[in-house]
Image 1 (tube, rainbow, N blue to C red):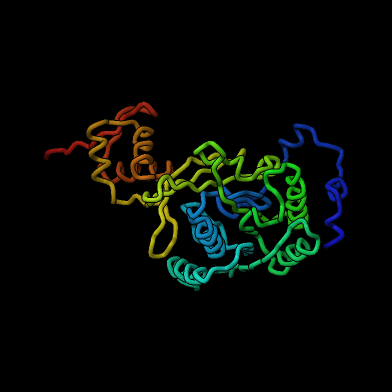
Image 2: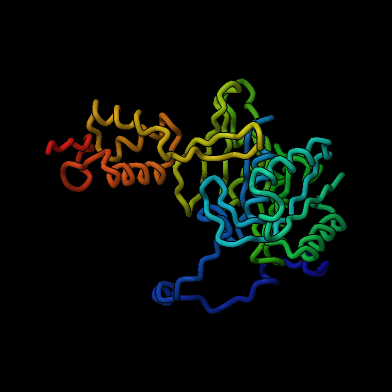
Length: 331
């Protein structure tokens, strides 16, 4: 394994004769490779970012448990359970076991976990050090990991992340991991921080070297508008997948994040809004997203369900139609 670390990409990859446009387009579609639909694919590299004390570790822990159990995470489907290796570089705190216990029980107990995840503490780790990097590769191989969580970024190596010269050593290490394990997905977590003289939090100032930021396949940003506001905002950036931002919550008893499932909890409010505004489906979905934190998918489900149940009716054709309260027929 160690010899492979010194190989350049040109040595690792075989060079072909190139493919024409028609050859590329005529190739069969690859089989689905999603570990978490649609945001996490095999071989992906991505970030989970949030402000300090927002609950990023809880977010990653729940993601680990859901991937290991095949349980949907924030309404994103997990096609089948996978092996997760969660490497933490910060000192363990005595509450971690208690938090883990609450979350496991909240998801249905240890029996729900199909493939047990591995949690590893790596004090004084340096990914640019050959021995430390070899240890990480051996750990991935030993546990046959399919998802690798590295938390947090700023302790992955003793490098100044503001210095762009430090970007390439990190990128090369990530590339070497993916070259050794092409089906492994890597997620790295880090804090966001405020720019000097600017109250807004910056993605740029989070990573320092923008080359490292640009090399990632996706970014998930967890945002808490106000400390007294219990709602979180999920924002996703990717060149390949477009996902609308949505609001989610955290249960204080189980510490689990969840998206409010709109069953019958807001029927009266929705009926009142439709009665007063006669909105299009798109307008109603935007209103439900702003008012209740529903995703577009949930909004569509709610509208379809309320039409089917007879609460709402649809006048017109296509996208120009209006939603109305279904008139009561007198017999």
